[in-house]
Image (cartoon, rainbow, N blue to C red):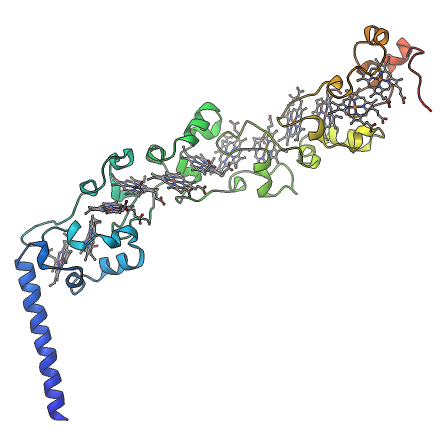
Length: 280
Ligand code: HEC
Ligand code: HEC
Ligand code: HEC
Ligand code: HEC
Ligand code: HEC
Ligand code: HEC
Ligand code: HEC
Ligand code: HEC
Ligand code: HEC
Ligand code: HEC
Ligand code: HEC
Ligand code: HEC
């Protein structure tokens, strides 16, 4: 028992002495060949743990490729990022560590609230859209909306929907974040979404008895906000030429598209010609 204890104590002592001697030796030397990654961890636990958990491609870079030399021989063995990263606009930025806070976890990126220009070293489309389509978003910083890299915000973080039953996912059916004033939509946009602002048009159409009632707003007002169709786009020339010449506007008899066939005062005054008779 005693023998075993003593010998194991000796082994431990030997190891400690060994490590100290080795460490001392290592520190005395500054050549990177003298120390491997495994040696550094004996005294520095943080960086190796960081690299192991989130080192990304820096896992394949030896400690001593970045840290050439060691105190006291080399006072500050801290590399410049640009020793290895050159040749892209991104690598010409100042203060790499202001975003890549920890070089041992290089893809854990954080930045403050007023960042635009650094983003443009990689993303160019969005700024072009923002500048070509001036809106109040053009004046915002990229990071005002994208506070964490890669994260896309909901519009409703900053804006109220147009109607209580309009969900956050619906904004994109009409708006694009980088050109919010250019409102476009697909043919399946629900009429109630238009009705959120055009209550009167919505009510007149949906309570009308004419066939137009069955159509969605976007069936006629296609694709782009404020597009207004001509009756003739769909109906061609529906009545004899003589009548069309005398009454050039459809609305003179048909009222408005949202409420057809409510033959108007105008029509009564002018008297609908005999050629057009109300069908039974
Ligand atoms: C035997 C212990 C020991 C070993 C092994 C060791 N270091 Fe150090 N290291 C230290 C000590 C102690 C300091 C502080 C020296 C000082 O500030 O003068 C230090 C300082 C540093 C610094 C400078 C930190 C700063 O803030 O300036 C770096 C970088 C560094 N070590 C990297 C390494 C790397 C890389 C390895 C492996 C190749 C390594 N060390 C191996 C003990 C060790
Ligand atoms: C890609 C280059 C790179 C690699 C690889 C790298 N480091 Fe570093 N390390 C740096 C830079 C840059 C700093 C300075 C960070 C700062 O100023 O905030 C640093 C700082 C340090 C420091 C001092 C500050 C601290 O965090 O304690 C130590 C110690 C250190 N590294 C050890 C290591 C060890 C050990 C390894 C290998 C497991 C390693 N580094 C791998 C670039 C690297
Ligand atoms: C000794 C050389 C060296 C230094 C110094 C260095 N890097 Fe790297 N870094 C590399 C290599 C090699 C890669 C992998 C490149 C590749 O695969 O294209 C890399 C990759 C990266 C990546 C991508 C990581 C991934 O997993 O995709 C980032 C981010 C990065 N470096 C940031 C930095 C920053 C910030 C600094 C300065 C603090 C720095 N590097 C200093 C060598 C270095
Ligand atoms: C404003 C913040 C910011 C600054 C400052 C910054 N970076 Fe980056 N960097 C990023 C972001 C964001 C990414 C993209 C990460 C991703 O792809 O997930 C990135 C990616 C990288 C990459 C990997 C992708 C690639 O294109 O190579 C490297 C390497 C890199 N940065 C190096 C640097 C260096 C070197 C500097 C300083 C000259 C620097 N970065 C300054 C934010 C920054
Ligand atoms: C070094 C290059 C680099 C820099 C700098 C950079 N990014 Fe990125 N960004 C990327 C890459 C690469 C992706 C991943 C693209 C993908 O997944 O298709 C990405 C993804 C994104 C996404 C998510 C895209 C999606 O489809 O979900 C957003 C949003 C984004 N970046 C915004 C920013 C903002 C804002 C900044 C400035 C603070 C920035 N980026 C800086 C390279 C960069
Ligand atoms: C008003 C908030 C806002 C601002 C400012 C903003 N974005 Fe976006 N960004 C978004 C939203 C929301 C999305 C999701 C797509 C959408 O809704 O159109 C997005 C999507 C992205 C994407 C994914 C690809 C794409 O184009 O859809 C990238 C990359 C991106 N933004 C980068 C940027 C950059 C770079 C800037 C600054 C020049 C910027 N953004 C400014 C809100 C914003
Ligand atoms: C981080 C906050 C933020 C997010 C997210 C955001 N916006 Fe904005 N938006 C603003 C601010 C701030 C203004 C300017 C308001 C003002 O000055 O009255 C604005 C203005 C607008 C305007 C009016 C533009 C003008 O020039 O009149 C529209 C439209 C708009 N946003 C739509 C959207 C849509 C759609 C989304 C989602 C894709 C969105 N916003 C996401 C902050 C945001
Ligand atoms: C059916 C299409 C449509 C949908 C869906 C839609 N919008 Fe709009 N939005 C518009 C139109 C059209 C305008 C412009 C009105 C004008 O010209 O004044 C507008 C204007 C805005 C404005 C500018 C200020 C205002 O109220 O006039 C903001 C902010 C806005 N929308 C945010 C949103 C958000 C947030 C959502 C999702 C919850 C959303 N929009 C969904 C069509 C839509
Ligand atoms: C956020 C509120 C909002 C939403 C949602 C909205 N609009 Fe508008 N719309 C307006 C405003 C404001 C005007 C301008 C009114 C004016 O100039 O008197 C307008 C004008 C119009 C005009 C008239 C253009 C003209 O020349 O007189 C049409 C047509 C129109 N919208 C159709 C639609 C359709 C279709 C939808 C649904 C896809 C829709 N709107 C959604 C606010 C909205
Ligand atoms: C986008 C195409 C489109 C536009 C624009 C359009 N219509 Fe129609 N209209 C239709 C369709 C489709 C019908 C239904 C035909 C059917 O079911 O027989 C219809 C039906 C009618 C009818 C018959 C109504 C009934 O209840 O029997 C009249 C009258 C009419 N349209 C007049 C007009 C007038 C006037 C305008 C312009 C103010 C107009 N339309 C604009 C597509 C359109
Ligand atoms: C059958 C085609 C058709 C449908 C469906 C339709 N519109 Fe219209 N709308 C028109 C035409 C054509 C005009 C031009 C005025 C006219 O000739 O009646 C117009 C005019 C408008 C105007 C401007 C004049 C005004 O009344 O303020 C708005 C706003 C409008 N429509 C919104 C809507 C909305 C919202 C819906 C759905 C609830 C809708 N429209 C459905 C064809 C249509
Ligand atoms: C002078 C009055 C007058 C004018 C102007 C007029 N219409 Fe009519 N329209 C009528 C009458 C009356 C009918 C028959 C109503 C019925 O059959 O119920 C009719 C029927 C229609 C029908 C339905 C045909 C069917 O087979 O069901 C369409 C579509 C139509 N008109 C479109 C138009 C368009 C488009 C214009 C403008 C280019 C126009 N009308 C101009 C009076 C007029």
